[in-house]
Amino acid sequence: MTKLLILNWKMNPATLKEALSLAKASDYKNVVVAPPFPFLEEVGKVLKKSRLGAQDLFYEEKGAFTGEVSAKELKSVRVKYVIIGHSERRHKFDETDEMVAKKMKAAAENKLIPVLCVGETIEEKNAGKKEAVIERQLKIGLFLYPRPYTLNPFIVAYEPVWAIGTGNPETPESALETIKYIRKILNAKPYTLNPKILYGGSVDSRNLRDYLKYKEVDGALVGGASLKKEEVKKMISYV
Ligand code: 13P
Image (cartoon, rainbow, N blue to C red):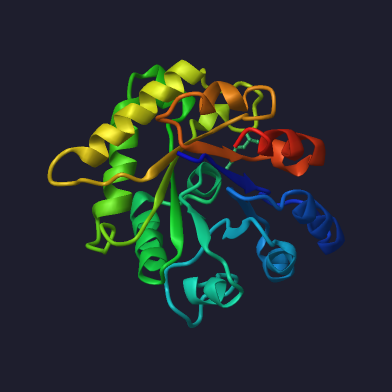
């Protein structure tokens, strides 16, 4: 199966000019580029091979929600994918599992492909709660509201919080085990869901192949390394 690389720029770069230059260097098949909201439309225009992703959305359709962006607004600038429940949203902006579920619903209803992020903190890991946390995030995120997941595609990204931006990635073996665990949950009756499952957390051109070599790992969600053109060029050659 082809592997997928999602490039999450987070709150970078500072200018549209830099964003367009980085987008041009990232325009390959099997790649999703997720720039900040203000750059989405213009970045979308320069992407010929890769797909456009957003880093978040708000679950209401429209109205008095200052600062928020709806699924329909994203669709109107040709966004195809949307990252939901990223650990930075959960932990720096207090997003709850219920909010994540509402966002997943809004994305699915508007035929955006949601990328549901799950992952444990270091405290949860050390307390032996990793599996329970991931199971809770998956089940609430996906199943709190009935929706057409059997019809619409979605993606899961396993990103241990402690591995994000630290240069301290989860080992490929352990990431593989967790991804198998996620798949087991999604395949247990009554569910028969078979999404792509990605790994994220300090992935770069030196370690990407160590994850992708497993058939169970469908790709990677990359933060810091996605901002460096040389890194992007190398990583793209592996997907
Ligand atoms: P880093 O690749 O910088 O660790 O970030 C990972 C991430 O959060 C991608 O969404």
